[in-house]
Length: 155
Ligand SMILES: CC(C)(COP(=O)(O)OP(=O)(O)OC[C@H]1O[C@@H](n2cnc3c(N)ncnc32)[C@H](O)[C@@H]1OP(=O)(O)O)[C@@H](O)C(=O)NCCC(=O)NCCS
Image (cartoon, rainbow, N blue to C red; front, top):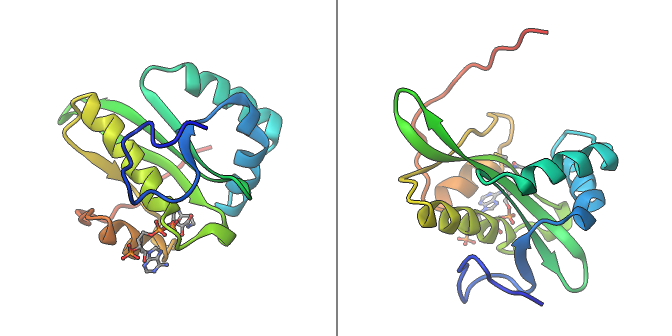
């Protein structure tokens, strides 16, 4: 089994941190449901195929021998007109049963290693104010809260 391909380091949790593959679609869909986005595995599989083929996206899963895939993260390289290139975490979830065991930290570290290897100067994440557990999590990992936003939508 491939362990630690992104340099997560000796403190990474047991199991692998590895790029997602098509075979992970069903577990990713189930975990997305926990994130509040009930998802059809077929739709996830089709998005996953596009994202894993994209040079500017990273989808990584955390897999434990006894439990299979217990978490995933999606990050992307973006170039903003006003402030240049950066990496943004667009989705992150660790299954309920695996939380507080270092999986979230390992997934974010994988994103940071990927971003650093691409020369991206920063990793950003927007976290819903309602996701109470994510705020101490990101702060514990060294992220700084820089602003609060309103999100608008038109359908
Ligand atoms: C936020 C989330 C990804 C954290 O994953 P996790 O695997 O439980 O986090 P870790 O175990 O790697 O925790 C890393 C650090 O954050 C801290 N932390 C994690 N959850 C915490 C919480 N609820 N309260 C306080 N601290 C917390 C841990 O204590 C740990 O610090 P330590 O090393 O000093 O012990 C997970 O709770 C989750 O998936 N939540 C629902 C979805 C979500 O909010 N996603 C983020 C969207 S932006």
